[in-house]
Length: 168
Image (tube, rainbow, N blue to C red; front, top):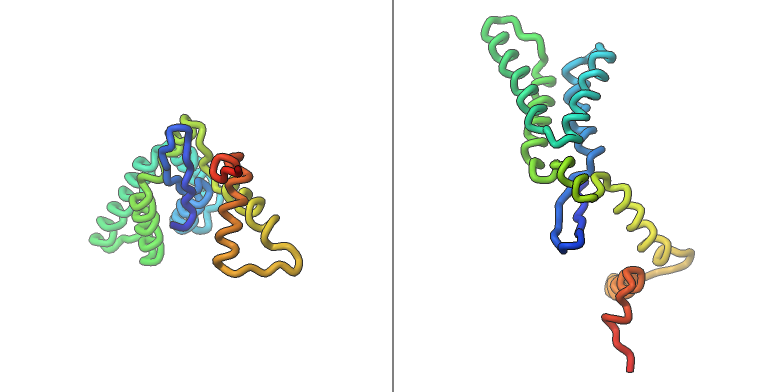
């Protein structure tokens, strides 16, 4: 899944964590659509919901957007709709996005476990583990060769190379 980091803690439990900034960026799309042309209002609302998202209150954000859409639905019945079809579509997509990732955006819980909520650490590790060693000038690898050497490199960097490979 795009934007989701898999993090293993001491209990060997795996958590699928959606990158906080990726999630916030999607919520911002809704803010930008809803408050088009009112940048101060957009910024204020986004800062408020960004805090809610970080505190694990995505359900509150969903409820607020659903409330906007319900009001818009009633206004359209009364021929007094304020939001374009495009804005309604974007807001609906934000709701679907947050609901689809509900199990991956419990950021307050992840922070309490000491887990990272951003993917920067993972991206940096990939760059350090893979690119630094395998993308040198003139280096070429077959898929099989790369995969085999990557396993060796990770074992070495994790400090368990000698545990995996016992030498006589």
